[in-house]
Image 1 (cartoon, chains in turn red, purple):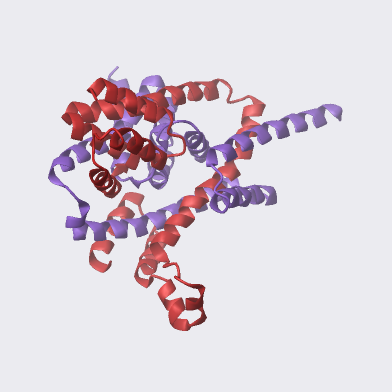
Image 2 (spheres, chains in turn cyan, green; image 1 turned 135 degrees about the vertical axis):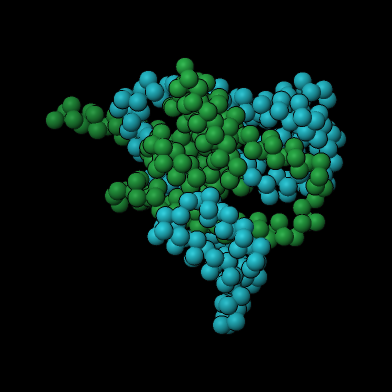
Amino acid sequence: MSLLQLAFTFFYIGLFTIGGGQVAITLMQQAIVSADLISQEQFYNMIAISESTPGPIGINMATYIGYELYGVPGALIVTGAQVLPSIIIILIIARFLKSFKDNQYVKGSLAFLRPVTTGLILVPVIQVIMFTLINPPETLSTLTTLEGWKTLFNLIPITGYAVFTFLLFKVKAHPILVIILGAVFGMIFL
Amino acid sequence: MKNKLKEFLELYLAFVKIGAFTFGGGLAMMPIMQRELIEKRGWITEEELIDYFAIGQSTPGIIAVNVSTFVGYKRLGVLGGIIGTVGVVTPSWVIIMLLAGAISSVDKYPLAQKALKGINVAVAALLTSVIVKFSKKTIKNIWNALFMLLAFALIYFLKVQSVWIILAALVIGCLLTLYRQKKKEAE
């Protein structure tokens, strides 16, 4: 696949990614691994590295694939091609919103949407909290004993979570500081 | 001219900072956006960030990029939208290109994995603060709360795609406005 074809592929991936990075990764896998450009094993490794490094995961993956196949120009062009459709679409919507921001139907729709969006955001919040703080029980019978309940909660992460939440709400700590403290906390206690 | 250049540079750097401290998906950048864009710089309001997120979630592309384009456009027009996006992807470019040659697998770096586990705990706390702030802004009566819980339940338990929920909410909101309008006219 030439760099130009790769760029077109990622433009297409960007255009059909609806609902976040996970969708993008599935599309990338179909396009890249199925075409034997990158092995399955290497692809999984790339996901792990993209998850562990700063930056949105979908962008990290695109950059990684572009770099792996075509070096620095590949990294820049592939990522650029991937974000191009969303830049165009968002600029059109943003322009529309600006012209109609006083339109009562636009206002009414957005006002109704906001609490719904809060519910939508609550989903990944609950998922992250469950994932980091709670061990799902293997069977429900573990919950009949006190010991079983004890294994349900990861006490060290829960303590960290409590401290970080306190820092954010009461001390108004900067989110970046909390992330750095999180990294240090992990290296020492986890 | 010089002032304009400075504004673009400030926009670019703000988004570099946001991109550099986002781990995982797009939602993880919300707390940093709240602090940097709303509280510190006043470039957008809390409501606007919520709207951008909802629209970014239901249109093509990576959410982080969509929200950055939105904010950049609002602040400095079309070029601002592009600069904001370039800013948010810059850290990915630099870090991945530096690491790609050096790292073959994350399994070889146990300390980095521990750090990442800790960052996940920090992200859980950050997301808790986002949801509390958003709720304060958006949940003003019992109906708001009901629709919030309904949206949550549809996605969490029934695995409905969020894009359908957002589109449905926009249509219902529009119809409700129309209905209120008609009622007002009748009176």
